Length: 55
Image (cartoon, rainbow, N blue to C red):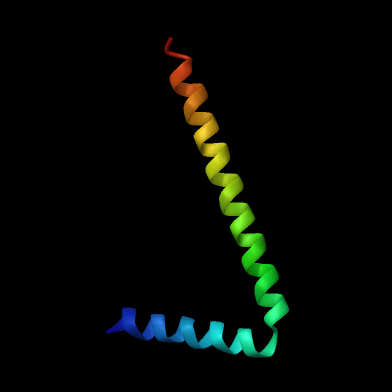
């Protein structure tokens, strides 16, 4: 029940944000996606270096 309520709250918040400030939401989404990509790239680079250190 709590998960559904939280999901509905997040969807309503994002919908409100989309209608009141679409450019702000787009910029936040773009920035978040870029940070996630950078974090994943750095993580995989570190893992590759780690496993290469064994050989």
